[in-house]
Amino acid sequence: MYKEVPEVGDLVVVTIREVQNFGAIAQLDEYPGYSGFIHIAEVATGWIRHIRDFVRVNQRTVCKVLNVDANRKHVDLSLKRVNAHQKREKIEEWKNDQKAYKLLGMIMSEAKISNKSKIREIENYLITEYGSIYNALYDAAADKDFMIDIKEPWRDMFIKIAGDNISIPLIKIGGVIEMYSIAPDGIDSIKEVLEEVSEDKNINISYMGAPKYRISIMDEDYKSAEEKLKKNLDLVADKCKKRDVEYSFSRDE
Image 1 (cartoon, rainbow, N blue to C red):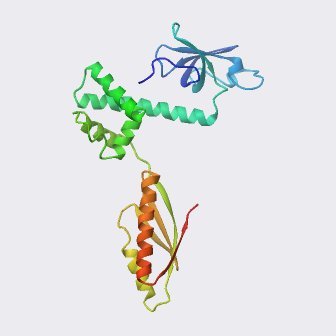
Image 2 (cartoon, rainbow, N blue to C red):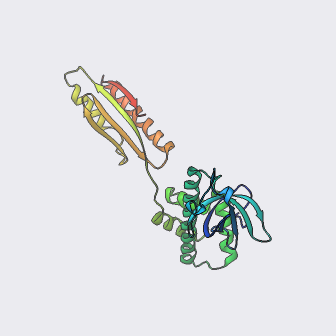
C-alpha cells in the first residue's frame, strides 16, 4: 500500500521552504502536510561557512529521514547522508510516480470510475502486484498479455493509455560472426545462410568486410534479447554446417 507516513531511513523528495543560520525547513513533496528540518550539521560534511552555498529556497532535493513525529507531521532530515546516485534514483522514481498517478486519473476518467473507494482498491491492487503504479503501467506498455486473467472493465483502457504514454527503451546486444568457405560457390553459400536468419525487424546483420558480419539484437529486456541471439546463432551454425561454411562468433564486451 502507498505509505501515508514516512519512516526512519526513508529517502524522501523535499522542497526547501526556508533557509536559516542553523539549518533549513523543507516540505516533503510525497507526504502532504509534512515538513522537516535539516540541521546545519546534516547539510554537508565538513565545516560549513555559509549554509546558502549548499541549500536555497525552492530547491528540490532528496533527504534521508532521521526521526519522525507523526503527531506534529514533522521529521528530522539529513542531506549529507544521501549520495549522488541515490539522489538521481529517488528523483527519477518520484517523477515516475507523479506521471503514473496523472495517467491513472486519466484511465479512471475514461473508464468512468469515480468512486474513491474503488479507485483506492485499484491503486492498492496495482501497488501490491507490481510494486508501484508506474511499474504496472510499464508492464502494461511492454506486455500485451498484461493482467490477462483480470476481467475488470478498466483493464483495456489501462493498457491503451500505458501504451500511448510509456516509452519502453530498447537494449542492444550482439557481436561479430566470421564465416568463410573455400568452396567455389562459398560466397553464395554464405549469402544463403544470412538470408535464412530471422526476419525480425529488431535483428540486424550487417557486412563488416570479409569474412566478418555484425549481428545486433534490439529488445525490451535482456532475457528476451539473449534468447533471440541464441536462437539466431544456433540457426547460423546449423546452416553453416550443412553448407560446409566455417563459422565462429565473438560476443561484444
